[in-house]
Image (cartoon, rainbow, N blue to C red; front, side, top):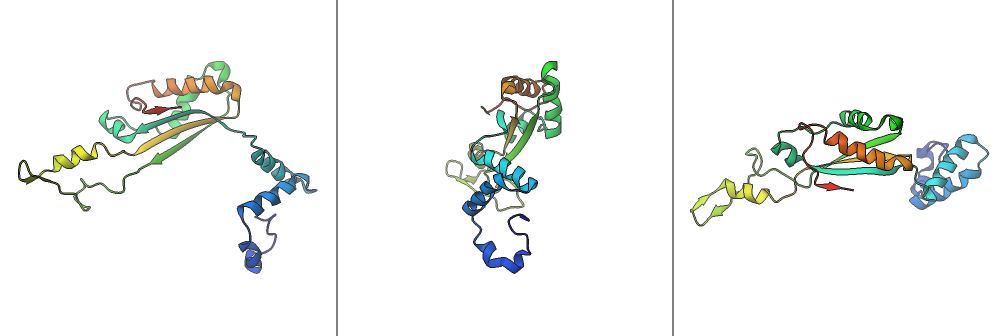
Length: 185
């Protein structure tokens, strides 16, 4: 923000409040011709983004259900271990390929109704005349579980296929790894 606001923001609050996404984009677009090297470099990088010249391209995407990990008594693959396994799975000629692993965890559920410490859900079964917790378990079986998404990006587009194949091999390497994938792209 130093280039945008070289003074204390508290002294220029009105100017800061007028900062919008559009004004930011238009300001950095002009830095491509700036006489200062730092701004010119930053302006060039922003120009690539604004010109949709994407530096990193997704080579692999896999989404797993945490419930699937639990069923198979497998643990989630930690990012640093997955990166090592990918490197090992790459053919020797491609071990230098630059890539970045992004791991995102998503949990669409807002609570666990089976946890007695929280507010449980009670369902009355008119057939038996009882409150049956197994009914809740059956219903919850269809609610999406926590998901873990592994995405691998590379700057070398020519190596995308080789990298994707290495990711597949890294995930399938042993039975203690993650379960079968639910989604792949």
